[in-house]
Length: 150
Image (cartoon, rainbow, N blue to C red; front, side):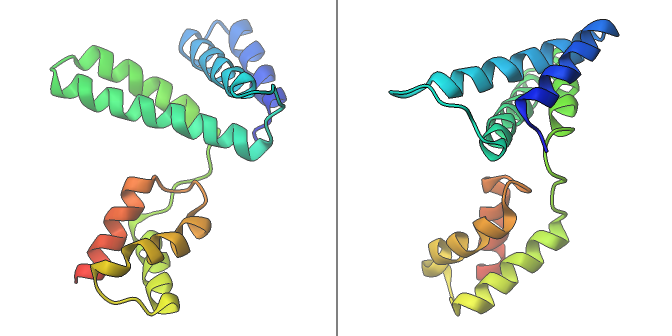
């Protein structure tokens, strides 16, 4: 789905179109992927799933930065972060709606037979593979907490 090759091709197209936001965002994503490949003891080629994880991490950084800039009253910087986030989101799977997430959580609670907050870890362990990058961990944890408390 999102191989390094397609990112590279899209970056080249953005360069030709003189789309500065897209070019710089894709260049940053490629740098993050390269950094991930050379991190650790041995350099390795990332799989498409690992590339997705790197892009998701970069998207999360943009989302958090936009919120921080909003809180500081720096709307122009927040808008720039959101523009970069929009580019990155094109390369991520469609995010789960709150209803879809709640359904997955209630199914996991039913499957595990957990009751109460003590079993939150078990439910999270059951839900995470089903979510598979389509919702951030914080969102999943909040949904599990809501379901277990009420």
